[in-house]
Image 1: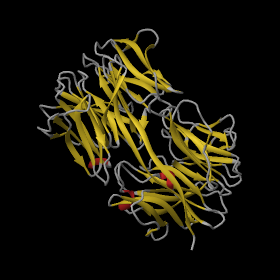
Image 2: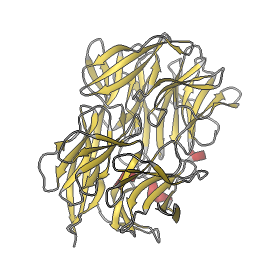
Image 3: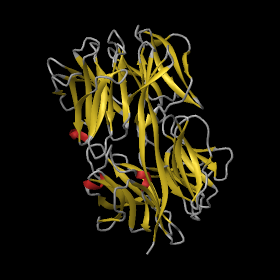
Length: 530
């Protein structure tokens, strides 16, 4: 049960859960019973909130174009609401507040999605706003600001009439420390409306519910024990606090296309699989109990496992070099605290890349292994591409504001990547000689893109109901050749993303797919008010 939200009358809980590898929206009564599945279309969803009258549930797509949708609480046809994310409806339900990843400030539109206007502009500020809650008795919005060069979060109260913001100051950095990244913005609810917040927080590997004061920035632990406890939801009738207790678990699995056989590579929580160019090995990240993530390398069938790195921050798998024995990875933090590394697949020869500003990630090896291309994200989720020459340690910026680079063509002239969201969502390329960002397949909803082994086409996956289709797009010298072709229909579905990370990889010869099989169990509890 993810992103659980309580209905205004306290009688039902909305959440998302994977069905056939795709996150769908569900409704369940707080009194118990079987959940009702409300969506069944393609595309993973995140639940935002209920409408004030409880008749609709607002949700958004986790990848693809930034769009907020609404589905009737008792079931029915979803409707598109606005182009944005993090929807917060006004108290009377007439307006919806939201943000856009490629724009500044806070936006508002009518409940039909029409008459969009910007109600607060923070252009020039390094803080990116996320709307959370309405203040009682007004349409003032509580927002959380985050930035790439700081671990802190800044709470503010935005008055949408006067277009002014009141700052509550920056949050203690310890508040954001949790396994796999920052605390979940979607978990935040009022404890005492206008004064204190409830949220889930991880300390020493234990996730519990905590209360945070906006005025004095104090923290008070609400639940005790092993947890993990998520999604606090105060009952409007004063009965207590509903919360979700549960643990995710998943397998990392290799599907062999020709034999149609599957092999489990890892049985613990694992993400970000990356297959070596020859298709014989895979690296991946595991999320063991506690707060340290681990980078592993194994054979494609799960044998000969070797732990390469452990990080107390968020580790990210990078790419393999063309020799199949060197790889890259990163340790993501904030700003200059993020670090990129290259290392041998046996753990030898660890070397750190020089700092590049912003938050650098996913170093991609050039075909001759003499350089790496690094995507550096700024505060607006836009990627600047840098080139690092290994022997001379020189740095060179290739292009600004383009795409998260994932592969390079065999001639070393073009970079390829996928944008998950925003107006530029789709597959893009970077012409290295021309230093130019080019949109190739706009609107394609995919998480990653890979050049085929011969370099004459690239592969990408699209998930739909009950299956995943892998397309092959013919390509030559930076140009598309004809339309995409169906290369393979996988006879089952798997998630394209998991926990905000890439959840699959395709070998260059299309012989193997490594993917995450999510699972786990969750229960809804009521913490009685005494």
